[in-house]
Length: 176
Image (cartoon, rainbow, N blue to C red):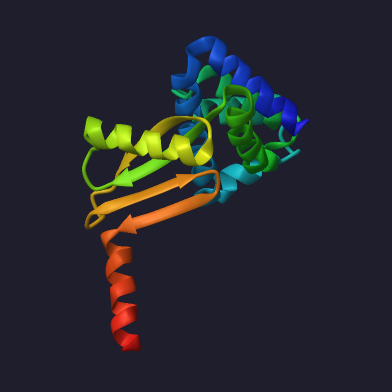
């Protein structure tokens, strides 16, 4: 069933808005999971059989207002069926389906300042050569970073942030 949720979600998103909708929903899905983890009572409510499936679905759909319509629909069905707890697994399958169905990898790139066009293209070319797929960047700005770059894709992380480089240098100095 989880495969069906992920496949339906990607198919609907591609039909409605293409790769941009897929990337937007991917980000929304990650934010939603974080939100429900930080608001445990809402996550518990989503699977609480003391309420009707329609009541649970209505509340979750209200929380999701402004999200991609296909995402709202799929999560609404999951809530109605009492499968909301399985959303993180659906997210992982969804990420796999992006690669499988679209031959595309979404690379999360976090920097202190926005990327310029040249650096964006360098990152895309290097990631495409490494991963063997088309690349879409999900750019994030973190003003708390000192500088550098952090990239995540398919469970791999490259941390070339200033904080990490300074911590590594500190470790080397302590050893000597």
